[in-house]
Length: 433
Ligand code: PLP
Image (cartoon, rainbow, N blue to C red; front, side, top):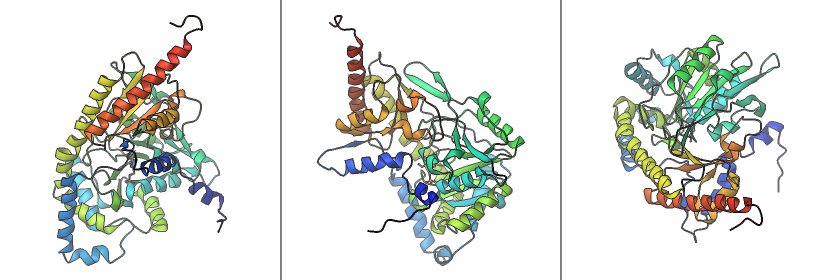
């Protein structure tokens, strides 16, 4: 048995961060096939037949082309596969009127690696020795940000304001007046739409962050993993915001290609150059196969069309059924609140003043045969004691409608029991009826 002698960094990077730690428990639970689990924990997008067919068709087209050898059998530029870069630049010029040139596009091995390169290029210890932070302006946010910085101290998140919207709904709003945007910030990062909450930060808030950041040359990475034009998982129109230091980050994962590891950054060439160099050192470049078939799907307009007509309605329908199930199953007198579903593939439930922590509730709901994800790992970089971080659950919309409805019923039973037991135990002795 070999015990690896890890460096401090090696030790840190070998820890499972964020949701991956709880995923281990979930995978072990699901391995028990004696139980018919209702799995509302999955982060993996669904394989929708129409999307799979489209990728199959473009793969067949590529196989028959002379370019096939060039794509698969050769190394290429660390910036990405040239025809794909051209297609991205053309698409955003034509559809959004952004003045994008190929020099403003960088392709990475999935968008996760893009955030890793950026967090460590712009954040961390500066050459003069001070610490530059990676600022997450709206917590909670994507659990994958937990592990992006080689210096965990560099990740800093801001607690939001909670806006109650009545009828058991709420929305997180960023506290922009308290946003510490100064020389100590290396980069700003947030997902829009947000995983886990489904929040879409208001366009004017994004503009305010972008304008203030631009004055200090701070890059603003907008993680658009669920945004238009693809996969376009939004419930209403959403403006994309463009600005001098914005790095607009796309992912092809939720549009059906998670296995190909394909992320795209669009931004100023000066900001992309260090990220490209980082990628060249770490991984050389992303898979060219994924880029070649994605170029075809984007250039033909089929990907954006499929996102709008198939992927978006699929999740929209499930969201509606989930909300109806919550309204039906959960008692009115318990302070439960669903975050408004503005985008993404998850629902986010806040159990205000919950008598149990999110991990205890996760265990109790698991006992009832349903698996959700405890919310606490979705607050990367948030310091201090905020009870809210232990009062939330993430529920995936990737299960079937039947499973979503049965799972919500199970959650409602467990949660109701927990609050009722608490209420009974709070009645002073002698007064119990
Ligand atoms: N950003 C968000 C908000 C995500 O939800 C995910 C994956 O779930 C990612 C980034 C990572 O995506 P990719 O597959 O492009 O690395």
